[in-house]
Amino acid sequence: MVRPLPLVVAVAALVAASFAASGLRAKPAKKATPAEREARAFLTTVTGLLQPLRTVANQTAWTAATDVTPEHTAARAAADKALAAVSGSRLVIDKTRALLERRADLDELTARQLDKLLLAAADSPATIPEVVAKRIDAESRQSAVLDGYTFCLQSSPGGRCRRPVSANDLDLVLRKSRVLKDREQAWTASKEIGGKLKPGLALLQGLRNQVAREMGFSSFFALEVADYGMSVAEMMTLMDETLAASRSLYDQLHCFAKHTLAERYKQPVPRLIPAHWIGNRWAQSWPGIVASASLDPFFKNKSREFVVRTAEDFYVSLGLSRLPESFWQKSDLYPVDKSSPRKKNSHASAWHIDGEDDVRSLMSVEPDQKWFGTAHHELGHIYYDLAYARPEVPYLLRRGANRAFHEAVGELARLASEQIPYLRKLGIIRQGQEPDATSALLQSALDSVVFLPFAAGTMTHFEHDLYEANLPPTEWQARWWQYVGRYQGVQAPRARADDLCDACTKTHINDDPAQYYDYALATLIKFQLHDHICAKILKQDVRSCDYSGNQEVGQFLQKILALGATRDWREVMREATGEGIGPQAMLAYFAPVMDDLRKRNLGLDCSR
Ligand code: X8Z
Ligand code: ZN
Image (tube, rainbow, N blue to C red; front, side, top):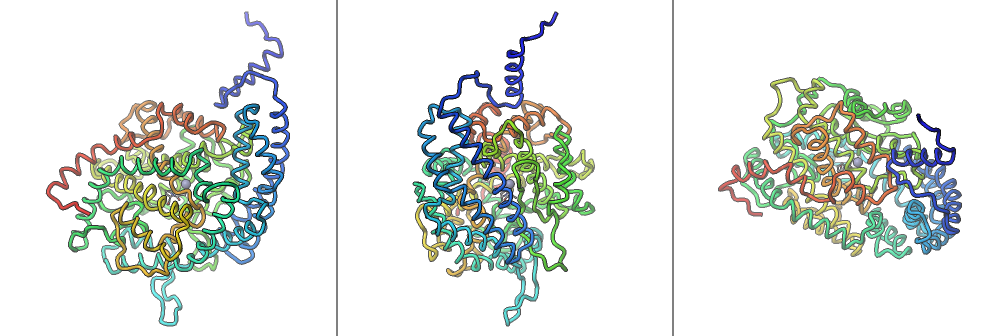
């Protein structure tokens, strides 16, 4: 016989069960300390003010990024100022600091919210209102310059553009053309915008540092790193260790690539690879080097809509819900028609507007391999957002376990989207048409391993110097190319003018400053999660592994996503994979490439 539980016990059991199911730890009910009660009341008030202000700021930023006009740029700045007035107010700063001094008397969840509040305040401290206002205006203007720019393949002597092109057009030339002259023209055109962005970044360098230093951080870089609970030195060490661990594989990939490309373009083998030989504007991934492994031909007869709908189907097949109808109505997923005067940001992004279910993505999807992977990536962000938008997760903790986790989930879905059994199941690749496994894995390393020297090397070290060392604008070009050479083994096609800013052409330097190590860490986490999913849950070969249709995989992911930032990310990592963050899973994944390349490169001059 089942005896009914007394009411109090039943409620306690229910609460504990719902916490356990949600992954939040049920604390034995203890009486809240006075500090805890005070903090909760404070957080309720502040969150009540912040959530609507952030929603409006996100809405106006969305409009500014999807329809670049002076009015939208100004509206974004106005909304950001209204938000800054609360988020960086003296009351918020002083009260949050005072409460955090009593950390021992606070619940973990409460202290975590206060930590996030203080970091957000450091973006716009009211103690220096003129600096904050200048920074907001400068950020808004910089995005408008970036998003409103039209690339130009050919200018007339009068300076007018004879051949305006989109970012997708330039990327296509770099991915497909075998004519070096055309490649150099496209690469050079992609860098013209840097000169226009340089004065804005020079202004922002000072303003970003000023706000961060006002709150006691050594620089803006240190402020952004603090979100991981790490110091600058710790982050830089982690980056350098990651580079060291992947260095021998990278050297083999570099050697193979430069010999293959020199033969393709009928050029002498260089020491460093000329940037315009590579199929990406920043050489952050090297698509198309193993031509037989390209999946682009399989997307020829597919529509743009197919690409995004298939990405949604992937998540639904794991047991996650369909996206809210508003996602499809409000997102901006496809390129602007060439005949339209509208300008929008060309880089893919995912937006969580209200911290609830207003989620949107901004993309310029075309039916090809790159956008197929990117659509899976962006929807990863969206499903993360939706998973933690629930009452148990306080508004201030509705974010990834850390920023890298958010990126890792997107990149994990991209990796899953490239697995041959999945593409076969979807009918994208027919039986017998698959690229051979060795070529596919080699190309995958050329997309993924080569990313680390860019992310952990060039980008992170450049932004470190930009903020921590106040690197003067006159030295930006030289430092950028010094790092591109040192970490990536790549060089500019010809000398670059000092008044240009090739670093400025990278979206993140402008819009997501001092955060690019997120993607380096995400690369490691991605392979660790992938290894766990394939080896432990699906019991499939990690290099030929189909997640789709498996609800257990969905539950594994959902459990991580639903936590948001309620737990320390190191714990989340250990509980999910049984290990700390590291390169071991990635290196094991590509171990056959290392063996293969040692043979292929035997006797070649690999020096650089
Ligand atoms: O910016 C992105 C995503 C949006 S969060 C498309 N990525 C980095 C980049 O393009 O530089 C994904 C991988 C690296
Ligand atoms: Zn992303």
